[in-house]
Image 1 (tube, rainbow, N blue to C red):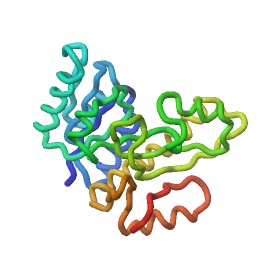
Image 2 (cartoon, rainbow, N blue to C red):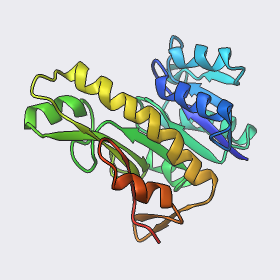
Image 3 (cartoon, rainbow, N blue to C red):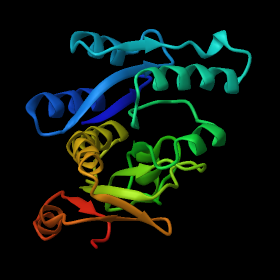
Length: 222
């Protein structure tokens, strides 16, 4: 069973969706560790309530990012983590850290990447007047929201949407596709070739593309 660590800085709603998927048996993975850079992060209390090992690692205790990341690596090694799941983790990981865990870190971003990278993606989408936005699960590389895309879900933008309304609808799709992306990785169905993700034997995802309404859009099939 895939051993995962979740990094979170805030309320941990995506963490909660992953916990629910594990408990239901839908997701063949074990959440072995939750780490936060904020002591008051609700994600830590969610982990505590679920009986999951959790740890606040204060970046302020370390002289630089390299020392902080050494502490992260020590905890990951101790728990024998195979996949790092970023769920609202608001710190940029160094190229050295990302390189050490190449193709072993995933993130979810509230836009249809490569559009609207970085902060306030929903606000960016509204300011550009797009008709559709959504969310993207991707591998983390050395760039900002630039890694290979695993899954995406589309959300229609209404004329009267504000940032909060759009963000809430996108978040519902995040809760749906993030556990699914982890499941694909746990089942060893995700392959990366020349910077692109291929999902093996994902007939369910192919069918979803042809259905009306928001759908998880897979990467190219093999």
